[in-house]
Image 1: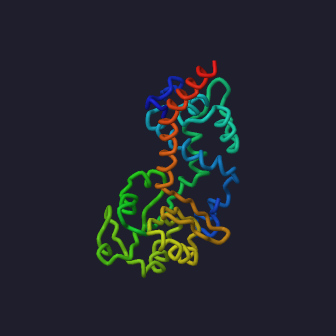
Image 2: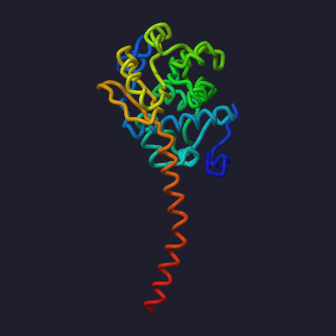
Image 3: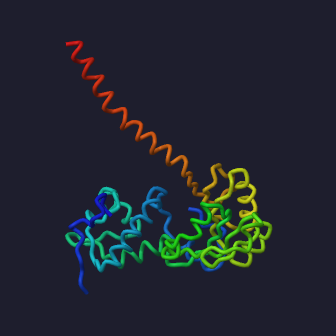
Length: 256
C-alpha cells in the first residue's frame, strides 16, 4: 500500500537461501527453484503480499509503476527483480496479477504448506503462535515448545505446549522444517544446536543473540530492540535538525 493507505490510481480494476536438508516433498520443490540474489529474495514476499491484496480486491492487471509505488520501490527495481522470474509484463498493459502471484508463490514456497515449530512460549512466543497471518502464507504451526512446567499442557489457538525435553520426539512426529526461536538469549544456542542435529535447517531467531550454525543452515535474526534503537536514532536526528540549522544561520550572520 502507499504511505497514505490508498491504492495508487494506476492500479486497474479488471472485470472478468538455505533449503538444504529439508525432508520429503519440500526438498524437491525447493531444489527446482531459482537462485535469486539475496536482496531480491527479501523483496519478493513484499511483492507477493501486495499481489494477494490486489487479487482479493478483484484487480486483474497492475502496472509496474503502480505495484512499485504500493510496495515502496522504484519501477526499475521492481522490473529487475521480476525479470529473474522470467516475468516481464506487457508493455503498456502491465502484469497479470494472478499469473505473477502464482510465479512468486511458487518461488517463495507459499504454494506448499511448511510445518513450523515455535520454541519459547513467553509473551513474544505466545503472540507469534496466535498470529493468524502465518497460515495464509503457507505456514502451519505444528508444535509449541517450552521448558516451563506451568505452560506445558496449556494451549494456544488449540495447539498444546509441549516440554522442551521432548524436542527430538516432537520434531520427528510433526516433521517441522522451520523453527522460530523466542527463547531467552542464554538458551538459544543450545536449542539451535539440537534443532540442527534433528535436521532443521531454517531458523527464525528472535533471541537477543547471534547463533553459530554450520553451513547449509539458514538463520534469519529479528532483533526488536535493535530495530527500536534504529528508529530512536532517526528520531534523535530529526529533533537535532532545527537546532543545527539555527546554529548555522547564526554563524553565517555573525561572519557577515
